[in-house]
Length: 170
Image 1 (cartoon, rainbow, N blue to C red):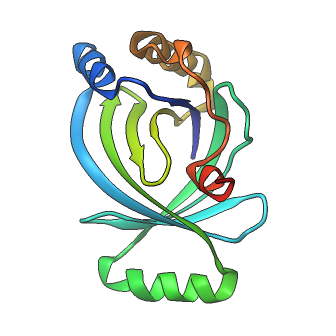
Image 2: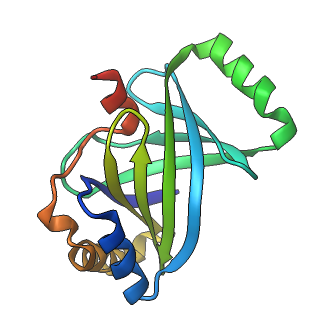
C-alpha cells in the first residue's frame, strides 16, 4: 500500500475537530494506541495494540518536512497472539521504543485525519491519504492539500520524524 502523509505540531485540536466535521469527515472517535517499534535499521516495524484489534505495520518513509509518500504493509494479529508475537519480535530484533498515544480519528474520503496526544511529547495532527491506484495520485494530492488548507495545517510547524524518533531524541 502507499499513502501521502504529513505531520504537524498541533496548537488547537478542538478547532481541527470542528473543521473536520464541517467538511463531513466521519468521526471514528478516540482510540488508545500503543506502538512498539522494533530495531530494523532505517526502515520501521511496529506492533500496534488497540482495544479491539492489533496489527504489525512495516513501512518505509523519508524524514522530510513536506508531504511525503510512504509505502507500508499491514498484517492483522489475532488478539490471542499479540503477546507471543511481541515476545518473539522483541527477541529477534530488540525493542527500539514504545509510543503511547490517544488518537482522534476522522476519515474524509481517502484521507485519515489523526489528531494525536502522544505521551511524553505533545499534540500533533497527521494526514494519511491512501493511494490505491497510481493513476489517482494527482487527484488524491488535491484532496490531501484541500484538507491541509481546511484544517490550517499549512500554518503550523511541520514535523519530519516519526513519534518513535521524537521520543528517542528526547
